[in-house]
Length: 280
Image 1 (cartoon, helix red, strand yellow):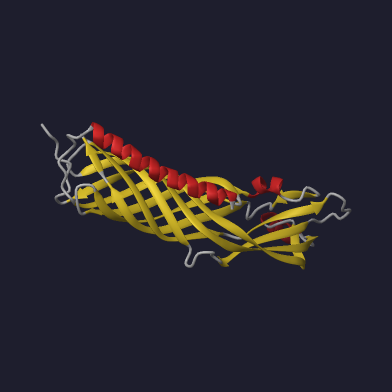
Image 2 (cartoon, rainbow, N blue to C red; image 1 turned 120 degrees about the vertical axis):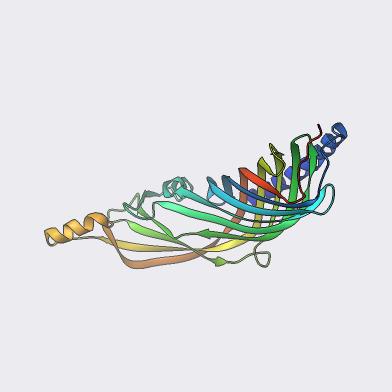
């Protein structure tokens, strides 16, 4: 909950900073470009940092956005995007019960593969000065969090057994505190137009998903694989050295989804009349 609150506060601060900065820029640049309203299409690549109970994890992100400006400064936008945020299983061991020794699986599920997707619509603001354009946005939409199942071994420090227990973590369907996993988004963009129609940009964006997902933790006993002949021994080189034997316990908890903070770079296209016509 603390991480979610921090992400939400950071997102609101980004939006507030954008509005204050735009007013300062407007006061200093009254001779900005002539403005022609219309349509804008943008695509961007970036790095998204997730913020949830599994930690702060970077990963690649892709976004596609459409904006329509109906007047000199204001418009509406729609954005669809997502990120993939892999994390090593071993990075979570420090948060677990220290009465056990932990180890990742030998061949499979050595990464926690998280992903975020969102569809957002909202209000856009635009202020042109010279070839530059300052464009903050704020929106509301649907957000989704996914995490593939992963496993690891654990063995009690006091145990005399030669075989560890295997822990399997499964993320189940969302159980959101807000219906439909509503998400909030705010971003600040600075664009530069080298030509009338095309522009490049950089932006900082924050997305908050104030929901929860159910996480099931299953603990199994294991047994060592025995190789009765050379062929089985060869095949087992590509599998785990321990085989799941019996379910000991199964617990269910909840994970705070949190959100992402992103740094993006991209290219945009001003369609039709929406040109950055320079003053000569």
